[in-house]
Length: 116
Picture 1 (cartoon, helix red, strand yellow):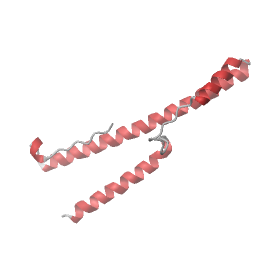
Picture 2: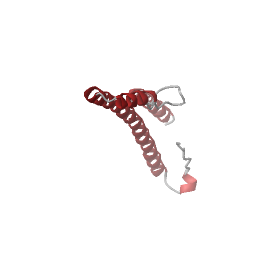
Picture 3: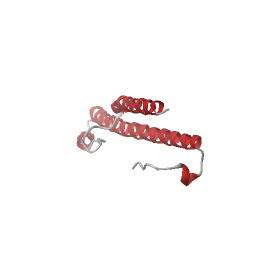
Picture 4: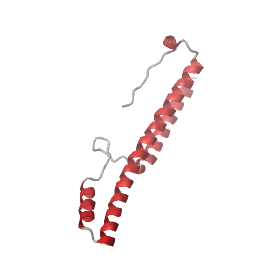
């Protein structure tokens, strides 16, 4: 789970520039962690597909019916990662993730510059 840390200048005793750096590092950490999770989910799905293809290849080359049964079982139990069933988590979500992130960063920068 992601935890949002609320830090104020009073409870850390740091200057405002240090807090901005702290927030920037925290945002980068959350971003990197999110990308790592997305890529890991995609890799698991790809490895499952590779396993199914390997089982089918073994069955085709040796005629072993157990390999075909294993391939069918792997197809039925194929891992799928989703966000509460709303969308699948795989590499195809990265462009959407980047575009939404850049949109929100632009909005935050516009608010910051308008308050100056």
